[in-house]
Image (cartoon, rainbow, N blue to C red; front, side, top):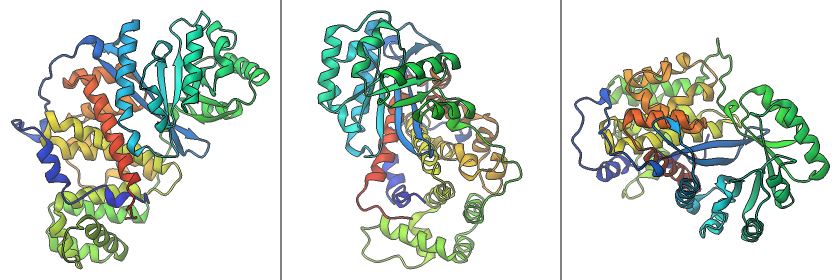
Length: 456
């Protein structure tokens, strides 16, 4: 169980979000989830923010790979130096907002053009345990003396430098002696990777390696054999063959309660069901008394807790418990991804489809429920009372919620074209999706960093 689950909801959350949302006319029906058309962003300012989780051999999250890529109308644009510089500036500015609650055990890997190494704010990124993934504007030319000087200056400030492994290339050879880590791109041919492995082992045996573009389990196995200590790629989203698996008793009991709330069961029946599960009743009372610290008396009964929370907050709390019931090492990384998606979609909906906010939060939260519980998605959703829009999105990526989920998933899957297409389909500027992702990640980190955190 994530230790900070009890802080994910507060009694003032719903009212606070309503106060923050602009006063826009509500859409006719929540099920349509029709976003208000947005003004077209300037092409140079349109960027697709990609964020992949970096995992170690135990599938524990160790960092994030961030990049902001230019594009328009679903096609990646040619990135002129001016556009690349603008995107690097936007990426740095957004990532700096994560610094206050950045987890001590995570690193931020930031893809940046070598022409942006002089950016004045880069030293401040040391708070994120940053590794700058420096990419050359001219890979066939040796790095300029000023590039070397800037890299050494940033390293003195606590910034680490990562280079794409390319032994023999002039730019790589001119900077390899300065690198803190090498990145092996597994989209390259296996023979090329084997050659790089041999060359790096001979010249730079002590410099760690990280694998990117690892899309299959075979590629992951190859990454470990080639000496990589961490890996990122589509392998983290692969589903197993879980046919025949059943939901464990713990999350199944929570799911049954969730279904009662979704089907408008009366509070007295919900309270009676809760009282049959002593552990869940204890968690609920502990949560309510922690979240309602301003009250002058302790909430001592389930009935009082239900009245104080309200059905919407109780639904969210139980939904979070269903996800958090995964007790595997990789479960925390998946849970974090699900929470970021949930909050990201909620933030995006605040301005353009506020009536759909709850559906979109649940869609993002349950988008990896099958992976968390290691059962088919149909099995995972069977005991839950979900709206048709949420169920369609999760089972078949169809319906009104599916378009929104596609925005979050494309950013996680390092697919800039799909992300830009999804944003255009909804009429949302890609940079708004980028801001929502950073806001969501900061929210999750702030919860984890809270000093008075207690287990749910």
